[in-house]
Image 1 (cartoon, rainbow, N blue to C red):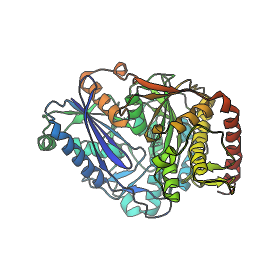
Image 2: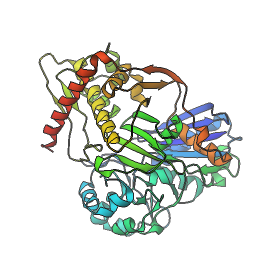
Image 3: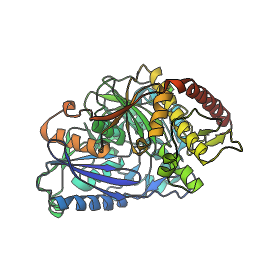
Image 4: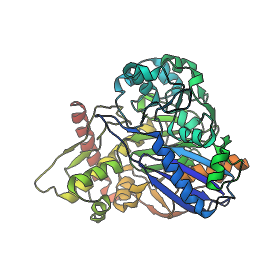
Length: 478
């Protein structure tokens, strides 16, 4: 058997999988985010350990004596800072924290960062967070012995080793993404050394073995290996089988991701597309990333006092976008705007705008932001002909029909099952234990395909044009 652990922003999920990739059990533990100041987003790494203990404890009821390997997935970019005794120095600064926007702009202005990392230095990336720490918390800066990404802190707890892997490391702005190794010149630009970084392995390689005390505690055999794993989106790519060029998925989670696999390295930082290593060797991927997808719908639900599922359930057949337009920039935006300052807005509100019209506008706004990501990927030469839809938002049939129509691209919905980060992490564990490769990362069985509505194509094109005009106007106010 194989375990996959996925450390998400709002919870940690674990699955138990057999050698035929059948999920035997799953468990979850909730997590919360602290926002002590505007633009800040933090978590206490001790909460991750408590969540992992809870999840492994739940899974242990199934009997874990046959487990061969554990794989890890987790939210990217988080700065987990530990001292020489492996003690956490401060709460982890998360991926959606925007406090280091000035530091990000300063680093991004240095040509070597885009040239070597293949990406814009976004405020959410790890490197500017360390620059912020050096300026604002110098007493802690002096104590930083290692910088770990969130899932790699879980690995430290599991194995006692400081190890990272390529897909997650690519989101730090310190990786030579083409060479798949730390860049000493980029580290030096931030006052850091290679010694402060974990050693790197590929996601499908062995990173270490679980500590004997933990194995005994949860009924695991001695010598269970821990695979390199992957950043959340790369692991989800492995889980949903998007590991070969031409394959893509759209993830409608807290954030929104348009993810395409590539068999070569083809960066284009000017588009604000993320070009990262995939979790498999000699493979890369590109992402257009928006910071609020279901997060925007949940925000609207709180605003009108109703659950998101109820709001989407009220909608009938797909309609042409109305005058009401929503910009989903509740905490800034990445692709294609690269702006920590831009904020969301409703435009075109009328007397007849009711709750359902607002719901449609929110879904359309996120959809149009994903279309912007599609256009940014296309500018790099990446063409998407079919999409898999994953994440909580994919339960909304209205949203899937809107995406298919706005992007003029069929959207495939997998059969019931979780093909996300935890499943991908378990697949990476299977690879590490057996030597298997990308051939086991098959595409899921498709339950149905959602086709574009040709009768509404022009209306969605017009809606996107209004969205773009509103985006330009609001951006001038940031």
